Amino acid sequence: MNFSSEHPKIVVVGSCSLDLILYTDKIPCSNETVMATYSENFFGGKGANQAVGTARLGANVHFVGCVGIDPLGQQIMRNLVNENVNVGFVYETDQEATGIAYVTSCNGDFSVVVDSAANKKVTLKQIDDVERYIYSSSLILLQLEIPIQVIEYTVKKAKNLGKMIGLYASPGTKLPEEILDSVDFIIARSNELSVIFGEDKREEILKKYFNKLFVRDETNSTVYFNGNEMKYFRNENESMVYKMGMGDAFTSGFAIALCHKNTIEDCVKFGNLVSSKVSTGKGAQSALPYLKDLI
Image (cartoon, rainbow, N blue to C red):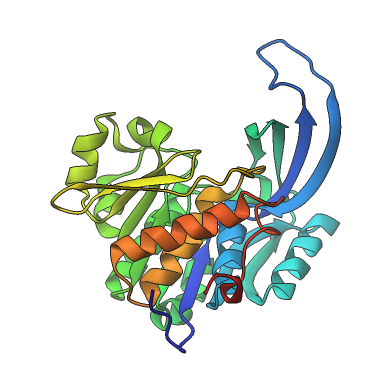
């Protein structure tokens, strides 16, 4: 693995929220009530997770997002600042509260319902406002918890500026071909391929997007096609206790390794390593590792 002394410049456009975790003895079925044994709160949102993840791995990060004018929004902003993330383009709205993800967790498995709230208010103007930082950036990172028109606009602007673009295609949503063709790498969950690509023939999809599409599952495994063969890497930790945020952690690690001009295979290995570290702690953000702990 190669890590130069230069700090990558990354612009993350995405969501921020609070993760409210309810721990139970089982995931409730339809029309079923279960009692939680206890609960915890963690900072989350796929965009904020990746902003913190890449910042801890040595990047200079600008985050573009939206919070409500409420105490939770202020807490999220302070946390991002404490994590050395620039929040100059995180705007406040009085039309929605700050987003919350409601999570039911049982023995490592979980179900999530997200109230996007203020995340729905990320605007095209914010992308215009951050344009000069996009221009000077090494990479733009996106996910799918903000309006699709903002994602499309960001991809088009970044592409016109000749910038590298990474997309964590989650939560799974049918994506326009223009986005799929324009981004430089796509990270997707194995159970969401048919939603994202409109078909479920995994091998054919991987071959179409060779060295570009990286498919992951809950065992912290990653598969991709390198143009000649399928490549498969797995870093399942025996002490895995917290699976939320593993995709964001992988994306952060992969992105940083790519910015340092490592091979695709090494980028995948480093992404898996970062993701495995998150799975042994608690909190999609709080358990993210620092670069000094990995090299």
